[in-house]
Image (cartoon, rainbow, N blue to C red; front, side):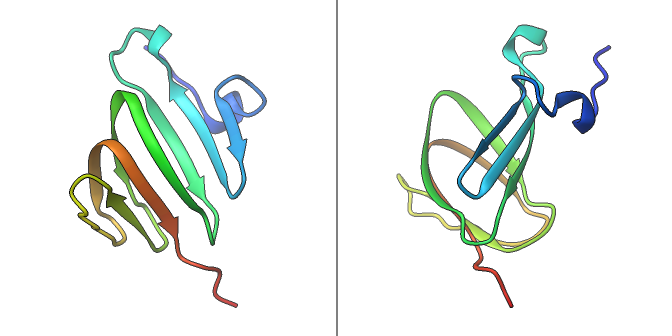
Length: 99
């Protein structure tokens, strides 16, 4: 059994940060589970095109607003508590900050 908390991951190779995003990787390929588990936070105004070249990914929006666009199909599901399985090219956008 693998048990990790966010506090266990901060400051390790499992934590990644960029402009308006942060990622905590709870499970890695080398854990041998056949799946990764990531807690990602997109800050207001985040806008990025991603290409998942080597893996499939599933996203689940817990709170907030934004869009996930599959660039191949043009499909744009968007809402709180919705699951987004996807392949390859994505355009992710978080809603702008409401002041």
